[in-house]
Length: 147
Image 1 (cartoon, helix red, strand yellow):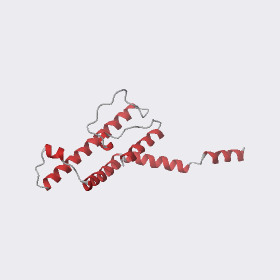
Image 2 (cartoon, one colour; image 1 turned 60 degrees about the horizontal axis):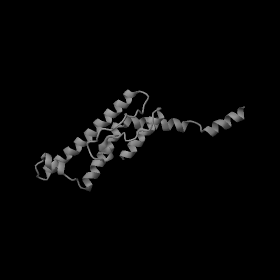
Image 3 (cartoon, rainbow, N blue to C red; image 1 turned 45 degrees about the horizontal axis):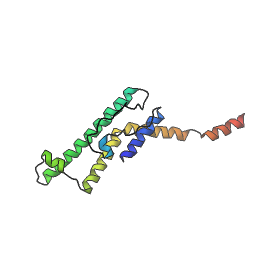
Image 4 (cartoon, rainbow, N blue to C red; image 1 turned 90 degrees about the horizontal axis):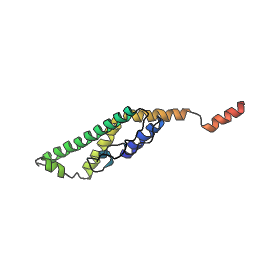
């Protein structure tokens, strides 16, 4: 699902005059090792206003941290329910089974839907505008008929 959110963010960005966003979703959503290393080179700019890029980067970084914290809290709760002491080492060593991973993935998808709701709404508006717009060929045909 994370790829769906990345694609969605890229679509809206391009529609708003930016360039496609590669790897815009925080590391935790890409299932890569965490924490991410600092990228080398210049930070890419996706929107005309660099403040929007910074705000988006901060928001997604914070969303990633919240998701990691929630997974750790879930691990602590599961260890406690199993009668194990939820030490740092136990939490770090906790390996969720398939059902736990599925539940966490479902929560993360819902969470990202909430965090990225404005982007979803923007895409829906763009899709509606596109649906309401006549295709190029139809406009040419109409112009030729009146001209």
